[in-house]
Image (tube, rainbow, N blue to C red; front, top):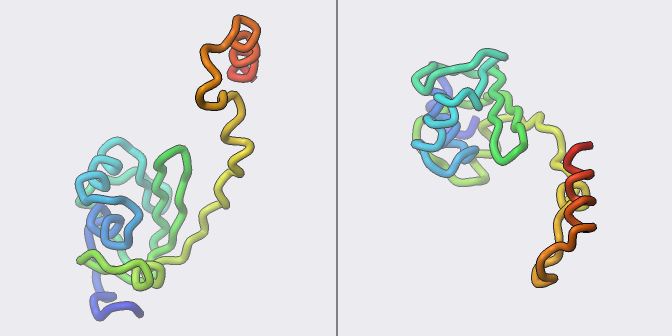
Length: 125
């Protein structure tokens, strides 16, 4: 695999940070504590151990990343090596057009009463 560390287990917060699913280890630990990380369908604490073959789900920025562990690494690795440490089974991101529904163009001023009603109607659907 990518490194020689592929045997044994590693902390889930450390692994998420090592393979660049989060920017910092503190953010990875916070995501675990707040219930945004699941291993094999179970909510986990930051110190939970993971091993090769486990399915890790990380929810961040309104998107869920679903990855299967291929290699356990303890130290942060570069993007090409990180991509080899897991199999990404995540659904594709939503297209920008669907995400931007209900947004106004920058610099168009305040919305009129009619615009606000349309925005409220979109948010209720």
